[in-house]
Amino acid sequence: MIKQNIFIGFLTGLSANIGGIFLYTLLFSEMGIDETLDDAIAQGYIGKLIALGAILNFLPFFVFIRKKQNYHARGVLFATIIAAISIFISKIV
Image 1 (cartoon, rainbow, N blue to C red):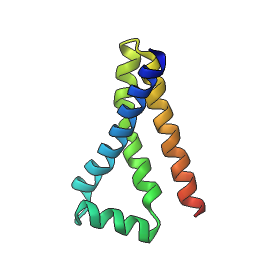
Image 2 (tube, rainbow, N blue to C red):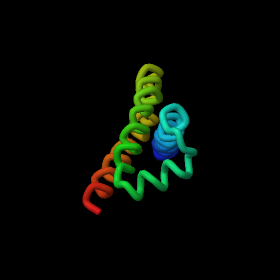
Image 3 (spheres, rainbow, N blue to C red):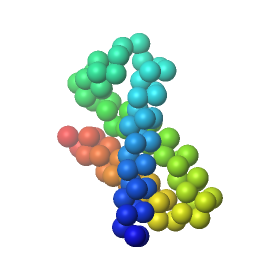
């Protein structure tokens, strides 16, 4: 049961991160989503897009904390750590 709760939190955090990337792209980019992501990879700012998407993880994290669903919140935190590692790797490569 604990692993399932962490996994649900992880999926929630991953979904929030992807949703944050799409939201940023729709609101602030003049290009479409595909063109923006291709340009971000080509120009080397994909890490910045991932970081902006990760900001949206605050919402489910604090909702889970307030509802005393600590294992769900751990999953969101784990998704945020995975995002940070991917940002680090994109900076190295």
